[in-house]
Image (cartoon, rainbow, N blue to C red; front, top):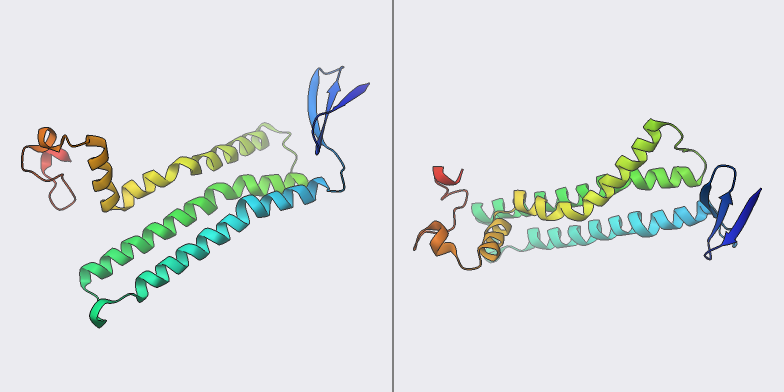
Length: 183
């Protein structure tokens, strides 16, 4: 026989004595399990995705509209293309890394996904790992896609010891000044 303990506003805890399991079940407080997950999906994925996409689009449109003296130099054009690429990659990374777990949670809430097999459990765990990866991927994306970020990062990491690392008057190596010893 199952005994239940009320633990929170939205969940009940059931202890199954025969199997020695504890499971959390959604408690009916006027909000269904599916409605809860749809609201969770909207507030933790769709609205943030719309916000970052919209704000980045606004930033990019302002960046591309700003032209000094009616002309844009080739270097300025390349720089704007690099910024645009970085923004697109950052938004795509967020969307693609969080999408699998969000879809699984919504599908579970409407009863279309029941992780019973090893594959399905592995899929859910992998989806969680992808979502958590999103938390640390942005600095890596910036490091790979932005030379200015790399320069500033080197400056912070080396804390003024550039003279001993690179010689007294040599600049920090960049894509254009890199020598064979830094490759």
